[in-house]
Image (tube, rainbow, N blue to C red; front, side, top):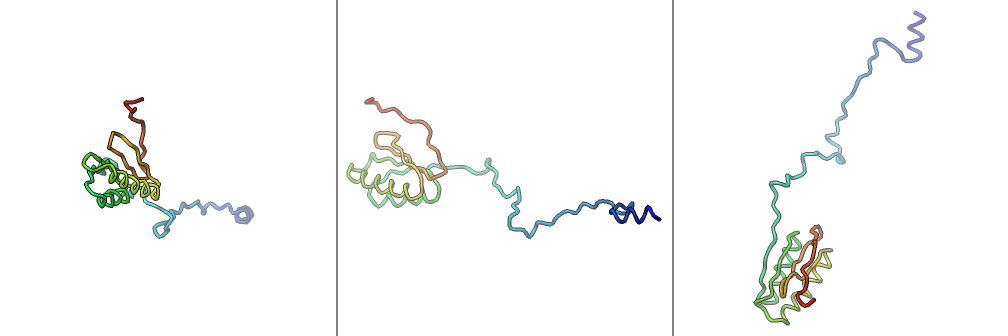
Length: 127
């Protein structure tokens, strides 16, 4: 009996077994399911290719960038003045979304949204 009182005083009982309780986090907004990520094998990335013919086509390219798609723009079928205006418009659009624009050919540009990375460069023939 004295041992029981002593055990109860220090919280040592044969009857008290440590019970593991599983926490229920189902209503906690900070817990995210590990299955919520998409499988990268089923998601395909696409690069759009545009050949603008008028200045108004620049909006179509900008909308693709806003939808997080990379775009290759070929200016072979447009005059140089309109091409310069479109490049200026796209440069401003890309700056606004934190993307990148890079010349990859004589009249060809690659425009990418923020999460794309352009690696490497094409050396200029005149260099």
